[in-house]
Image (cartoon, rainbow, N blue to C red):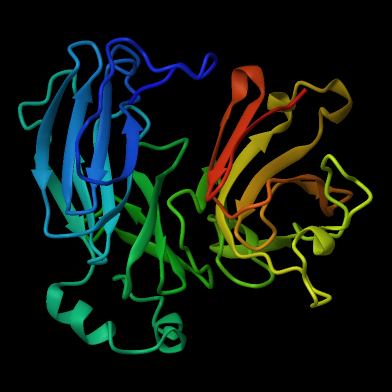
Length: 331
């Protein structure tokens, strides 16, 4: 179903897309079509598109893969998919003039023989091998650059985030070693910066410089005093923890810049959002606070959170998880 975000009501011309479970979806970003074409992927490897204007669906591709994530490049001319088989597939999605619409352009990643071999070894070893041009485990996230039509990033269970440039013959550029990516929103890009959210106990939110392919910093998200309806309770008390340390275990992250906060007093603040299953909270972090980083605020949702998004023009933030769907304002 397709809903109006402000009324939370289903649109009259929307309907159930399919009986198969849908694992991810993306609106086509090209401005003349963005309100009409919704791309989606099933767990069985099928990619389809739903035309909201005509209320019709169409099967585009059937891959032998469990697809985890889809993303478009800036102008919508390329659609990328990743999943269980560790391969990155790029499709022609240029709605304006392409004669090969929805046909595969290229693929990056290991062949089936290499995937079978690497699937049997431990995450420790695959982490050491993460400078390889191929991923060695299930892929959970693909994210295009917000400033380039050609640069994209992928990450998954092999503890590496890899950069790809479709203008090159091999595609592979370099790797960021360490991030354990388990969510479809666990990588975000802002110009020369990459933000990653890892499903690990601590140091889960990391900021990287892709000009040097080096980590800039680890961002703090777990303290004991998040904002909620009962501010007197610590995060440890809310989570009913006996351990003195709050586990992080993140699934999603997103850049959320200062002009999006609409707060003149914070005009120099650079902020990011993150959420997951450890803290069960949505976090807002300033990554340039006094030449360091600082947790600005947290909102306790009370269940594991798997995804988040934001509408910048009206400072709306939303996150969803096991038992909750929360919409917050940035004012």
